[in-house]
Image (cartoon, rainbow, N blue to C red; front, side, top):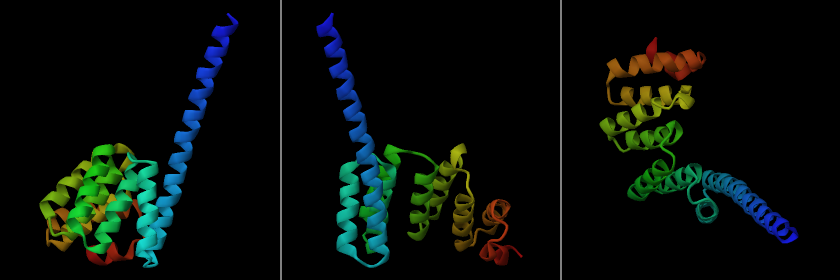
Length: 172
């Protein structure tokens, strides 16, 4: 009986250590991702890459880190690499935030139909119906002169955040 209790204790201890390690890796990945993006905004490309790569290594299925790496490549103008990273992020977490990020990228690539389909996927996530999604989708539609689509999206964005001056100027 004593040996069985020791085995159970040992297995439980290993489980706790493994869980703590996973949690620590996730926190480290988030920290490195944020540092990488901060470096990127400062134009520190090499530092940004190292931190973002470390974040992806620490949490290879984290959609935030994967999307950050996609944004890094988008920033550099390496759009095919960015596309692959965005798709990888979607494959790990096909939720509203991930689709919204990808849709914005597609809109910048002048892929309007694909962008709007990605926004539609973002709208399906009830946990991510945010001002940003409506705003981004509306501005994308507006940039392609699709006013019939843009107007209701921008009006929904205003319901979430009525002080958005850019949207108010477009609508009124």
